[in-house]
Amino acid sequence: MNSTKKVLVIAYYWPPSGGAGVQRWLKLTKYLARLGHEVHVISVDPEKASYFNLDESLKNDIHPNVKVHLSDSFEPINIYSRMVGKKNVPTAGYSNVDEQHWKQKLVSGIRSNIFIPDPRIGWRNHAYKKAMEIIASENIQNVITTSPPHSTQLIGLKLKRKLKDKIKWIVDFRDPWTDIYYYPLLQHSKISHRLNLKLERQVVEESDRIITVGEGFKASFLSKTNNVKSDKFEIISNAFDPDDFKMKDEVHPDKDVFLASYIGTVSDKYEPDVFFEALGQLAKDFPDAPIQFKATGVVSERLQELIVDNLGDKASFHAPVPHEQAVHAMLKSRVLLLITPGIEGTIPGKTFEYLASGRRIVSIGKGDSAKAIIQCNAGAAFERSEKQAVYDYLKSALLDFQNNIPFETNYEELKKMSWNYKAAQVAELLR
Image 1 (cartoon, one colour):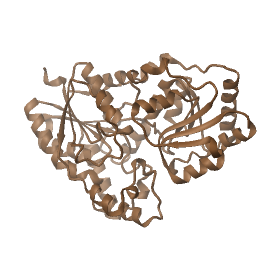
Image 2 (cartoon, rainbow, N blue to C red):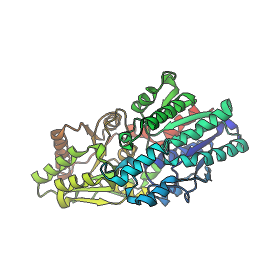
Image 3 (tube, helix red, strand yellow):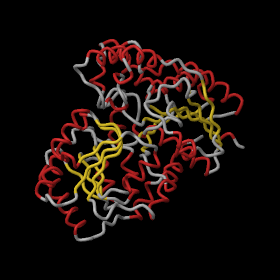
Image 4 (spheres, rainbow, N blue to C red):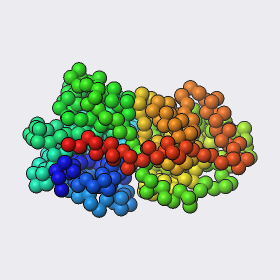
């Protein structure tokens, strides 16, 4: 096969790791392979990895032509999780962080000031060695590094400095680096903060191309340097996989329940209070209505208390589930809660799966997510101050439910938000 059709993807999060961070390149590699590209993936040996959760079912979605190479790793996070207790190690999104808890403050201090840019830095040299072997043996010219963890980008940086123009290094940022919403919780010293800024700038400046998921993230990275032009960036948002929604015609919401759901991880920093206050008021105003709220995933303790205060026994909380079950939970819902952090241009990955479900979306926080929702006629988006507007919209949805009025989205617009469409965009960037 011509070398221009070969690509090496370096991704820390890969099946059996669960969570949203796995989905992007699991899906993109699948559809790049379907387009005829020879795809190689380097990831960490699961026996050595420190994953937040596991989802063995995702292994079934790895395209048979994608060649996966696993490398060793030194994971300091596993050591201090034994020191302070696993429950005190911050989860993805820092949803379980108690800023007053001394053990978590200790963990954050170690994480931020010793392991820079993150505790997965112990994977860098192992993955670099593996990448050099594969690039040489397979004559690969295209290398893509995806983060977080942002230490993955240091693998690409080292490869680029060694191989120079022999490779085209494409950086994929799924999240901001020093502008991520939980960065203030990390207790960086001035030195570690400066080091993070320096590493971030070097990656932005020395890469050949940069992919990110929205204009807001692009602006964040552009602000770190005066030496990079806007056209170095390519916006490739997250998407949905049509294969994941084959059950859509068979799974429907219960006829007798007005179920609102949230699927995923949510921290206090997301500030979704207005939704639960509005839904709680609706439950009080319509005491005979079968209103329920179900959270599937990781919800901070404060938010659990807030939800129960507003909804009482109408609320339930469930542990994270495999991806297929998460899709099933979406399809069983009448309303899906989407929460966008207060960062311009942020599009949560679940936005597109919510859209694909065809269920009504209520987004707390506007921006790029709101544009996609409106484009697909899939619901509404609100600012955190618009409690009455959220209430009115939920009331309208409840009345539609009671009167058996169906909810319909714009399927033609939705087609543009699938992973096969996005993989074609990635293919255009390859050498």
